[in-house]
Image (tube, rainbow, N blue to C red):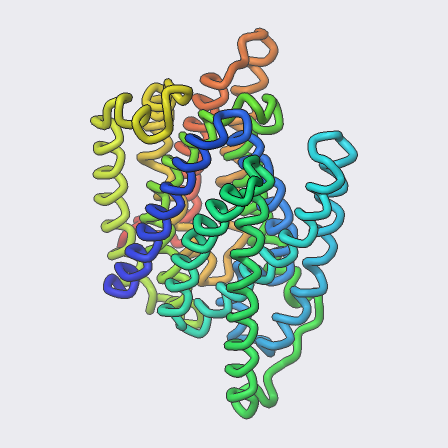
Length: 399
């Protein structure tokens, strides 16, 4: 398990390095204002994916052991059309984006949703090599296409949106061919497997995805309260922070894929190893961030992004602990206990809203206050997840 997780982590580190290079290029070439618009596009795309994944989504590794996999794939494709159309229209009506941006987000949003489900199927069937290759190819293609559009004169956030959309599209086409061939070869194995109806996928999917949506709203809450043009600095801080979460994310994906479908108790050894590795690696990553000087971030992103280290230090309590929630959540998902992932995040989001509301009522809400609220919410998510896991299992967390 650790070897497979190591390869997955390695691919995610490689992907993060490429993506980090792209963020540096965007920051240097576009500046904070356009960088903020790029982040707004990502928030919209993530919301589209969040609603789309209500139909199976990240619950796929659990569902393929019960239902006809090609049926899951087709139902998700139809369902994904709804958020891909409605969410960009909603943002357009609130004058946050233009009609041209909305149209592009509709198309790229749907392709992104399909790419996400393809990745879930690859994990479910243990095609880890292809999964990891896709994880690297996406940021690599995005970076190449962004620079291509820049050279062609598209020197704005639109160039970034086109780059990531086309990158998803190219990988989607490749995965489509691969999965169709796989489904065709497995036709006899799938014979007699129960065909799902929409509610079969929505029940577990909505519980699982509700947690993802609440997490997205919690982590991007500042974007709903402050102008996007002023959030370029925060966008880079959040990207750095989420790089730390690649550690529990990589371990968790392997836990989920390997443990789904196993009998109760067979997966405890996998969980214990992953939990301890995550604890050690996450604290090590946080220590590294503490000692990186501000001058390094200014060298990477440019002088207009001053203040990154100060904002990172505000996030440290949450960065050190949120991985605990992530590891536990993947374990709960492998057992089909999706609702238990939602409760800690509702607590966390409530904490975020409560602290933010107090700052807002005192007329002292600024970016730094929003970051403090987010950091505390991550701590509460970790504590809540550990408490719920212990209570439901009736034994210590790692026994």
